[in-house]
Length: 624
Image (cartoon, rainbow, N blue to C red; front, top):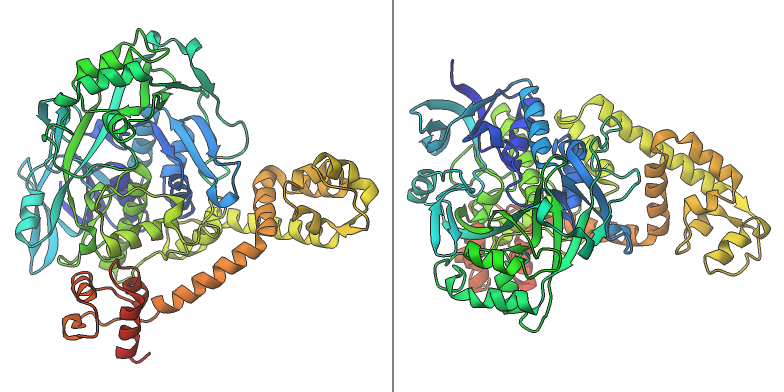
């Protein structure tokens, strides 16, 4: 067996799976190395995909031919579209998954992918010659050659688990840490630091009294993650449940703080502000008497439930006692306690927008190694790294995503230009152009470009073309069809409007708040027939058309702003520009520009500490 590949991907988490799949599908001979083939695509924390902004990332991954959306739909046991009460820029899909089925689906996809091999082992060293990666060395003593290497090590680099005062080396519970890579790269000049994340206890379903909790049902409509019409939810749909901590719970938790690694000095690394442990919540929000908890099923055939909102590194006895004070959990039986984990990450300002490292050619980082948190953020990075590794070794153009093009583009631009001072999590508020970056239009934004790269096949492109043709036909029908008040006044009155006094175009009626195309179709026969002609994807097409009609002004205004920014992104800065010699730049700007070395004026403008005056100086210096 010859270990000579085009691309080696280290780690088979969400970043690694997408990276390996993308590189192999584009034609590179790819090897995916994992420490445990039974944990491919493991959902280390909660068994869910998507959520606020994260769901948009998954839709983007799917639009570019990635696999996360497909795997999630096939393993889904509950699907919900969050934020439906808000504007469409905020709508975010989220799905509970069957943990075991999620892994099975990923394994099936990877083992059926041409050009892709899998090897179970641990990488302990990179082979680097003359500033370029040439392969890896493993714990089993093998030296594997490659033209490019993608590191997606997750939480395994020098991973350390905390259960109260008990510390155990590991990347996840019952899984060993990985050593050697951090030390080697640090010697080569890479900047590295430590981060911390955590996970809640898992409890036995049979010990939960659901009658004391509020049931949270999933949606029963056409929404899903994948744009493919060949992928549907297959499993029994299950409920989640809501309950709350109380003052008694908080008293028990406070009593254990002296043994908390977060408060006794045991943990010194950076933790996630937006997903705090339960002990952090009771300290930071001491005035609150209750915190919401979600009981989430781990699978159709599992008795294991995940206590979302109760992440903790306290001793297991304290966790168990505190949980038993919660309504419905009075008899809770633990499967395993929650724990915190510390691990190494690398300053992402050491990367290009392609996710290639600036210091070592053809070495790429993706996922938590870059200081991010979340399956979705990792998977998006993995896809971009996989594409660019292939492009690098085949002489193709770099593949980068702009901030007005995708949430993945926002994520990578933030990492490369701003770095991280805590585990990075995506939010809709991080995107300046979120009305352009909706979950419904990721295919329109990204599929055609991905097709040209070879990531997307003809069938997926034909689905996009069909959707766009259907939307155009529906919009034209609405624009050209008039309606009289006597035909729709009853519907308008029911929606809080007065009578229509004159004949109007349907498109002007649809533009009104609270008026829906589906609602109008119930009273306008011609519209109802038109929707029927759209076929099985009618709901999706109607939703897209309605959003574009109602929000046309906002969309056009945001597009103009994005185009203005793009002009700055088209003004390139020399790689060897000596910023320290430009005394008219602020001291902070000189330091940060010298360290990050932005490729364009646009990138420079988004570096914290680089002021508008500094940008004006740069524009003058390069003749603009």
